[in-house]
Amino acid sequence: MRFPLVPLKFGATLNGATLPETTNPDHEIRYCEISDISYGKTISWPEPIAFKEAPSRARRVVRPGDTLVSTVRTYLKAISTADIAPCNAVASTGFATLTPANHLEPRFLKYAVLSDKFVFEVSRRSTGVSYPAITPQELVRIPIHRPAIEVQRTIADYLDHETAEIDALIADLEHTSRLFFERLTARRDAAFASARAKHPLRRLKTVASLRGGNGFPHAEQGHVDRELPFFKVGSLAGAENGVLRSSENTIDHETASRLGATTFAPGTCVMAKIGAALLLARTATLAVPSCIDNNMLGITPVGDMDPTYLRFALGSISIAPFALPGAVPSLDVGAFRDAAIPVPSLTEQRAIVERLNHETVTSDDAVADLTRAITLAKERRAALITAAVTGQIDVTATHRPAAEQLADDIKELS
Image 1 (cartoon, rainbow, N blue to C red):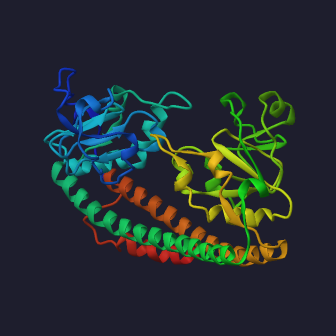
Image 2 (cartoon, rainbow, N blue to C red):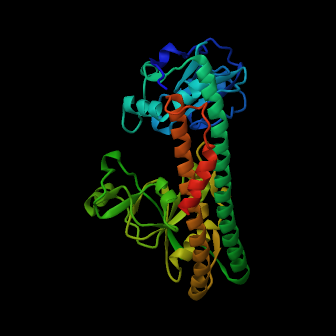
C-alpha cells in the first residue's frame, strides 16, 4: 500500500495553548519535563504544584490525545502521547505539543512520530553537538504518511494489540533481569553479613586511600588512542564483570599533568559521588592506570586488601546514610571514609572473592543474554511501528503475532 506523505503541520496543531505570565500564581498544575517522558511510554504525571513554584518553562498546556515530542536533547527520544491527561496538565517548553486535526487519528499520530523514519528525521534536522535541538517549526515540516482516517484507525488498533504483546514480553525479560541482580545482591550481602560477624571491622580510610577525580574538558574528550583511559560515571554501567578496561575517552600523560588529573593505579575501585548515579551504588575496579572525572571517587586499597574484595565490600555498604540532602544527591566523602567493613585475612578475602566472582559471572552472563533479548524486542517493536504506519505491511492480512515470532527468535539467541 502507498500512503500519501504530508508535512506534519497539515495534520496537527502545534503548541495549541500556552499558560500566560498572568496565570494565578496559586493555580495548581501537573507539570512534566523531559526526564518524565520516555520513548513511547505512558506519561506519569507528577503531583500538583503551584504555578509560582514551577520553572518558567512550564507553559505548554496538554490535553488528552496530544502528542509530546521533545525538541531539545533529541537523542533522548522523549516522545509520548497523553492518552489520559489531568485537566491541569502542563509540559515544558522543551516539548512540541501536537494536537491532531479531525482527519488524523490521535493514536496513529502517536505511532507516526514514534516511527524510525520520523525519529531519524528529527535527529537529522537537529543542530548542536552536546545539546542537539530542533525548532518546533522545523519539527512540523517533517512529513508523515497519512492514509484515510479509517485506515489510520485500523493500523492503530493493530499496533495497540501487537505492541502491547511485545511490551508484556519486554516487561517479563526486564523482571527476570532484576531478579538475577537481586539474587546476586542478596548473596553478596549474606557473605558480608557473615564476614562482619566473624572478622574485625575497620574504617575504610584505614584500608584504602580515597580521592576524587578531576574535571574533563569537552575539548579533550573523544580521543581513543592515547595512553590513559579517562572514565566518566556512565562508564560504570559498561564494566565487564565489575572491571573497567578501556574507555571511549583517553588522554596522554602530558595532558593529564596539564589538567592536574590524578592517575589512579590498577586495582583502584571507582564509584559515582554525585547525582542520581550515586544512589545506584555501582562500583568497578580499574584494570589499568586510568583517570576519572570529578563526579567519581577513586578508592585505592592499601596493605593486605584485595582490590576485588574491596569492590564487593563497597557494594555491600548502604549509600543512603552517606548521601547529603539536596536536589542533587552527593556523597559525604568525609563520613564515607569512616564507613566500616569487615577485614578478614588476605586468604579469606580471596576465598570470598572466588565465591562471589563465580556468582557474578553466572549472573552477568544471564543478564547479558536478557539484555540482548530486550534490545532485539525493542528493535522489532520500532520496526513494526514503522512498517505499519508507512504502509509496508497490510495490517488487515493474517499475520503470525509479532510477539510470538519474537519469542522464538529470542530462544535462538541463547
